[in-house]
Image (cartoon, rainbow, N blue to C red; front, side, top):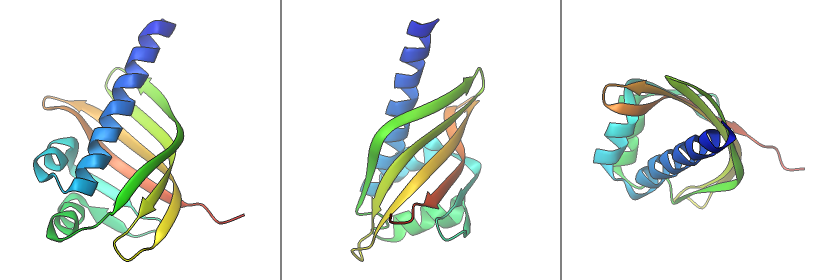
Length: 126
């Protein structure tokens, strides 16, 4: 069971890395495939962005300069749903850097695993 969990955790770590890299690189085909039609992001400022608004902003111009996963990802799994949590450092083209706790929920769909909800909570400087 532990070996199976490890390979599943590795799968979701790779999936989240693929999704965040696609957002930075503006790889819209990958972004569209990995975000469910009803996807919502809660930004560090508490703004709610639906899929069309979020992916539209990513597509329109550089949205992220970098998305660095900091430390280990944690994952809660069930057969049709996964929740992933980790620290991230987001860099924007303006030069702004935001450290966040990032949580994503994925659901297993006919198309494969897709992100349904994301929430980024800003980490205050110590």
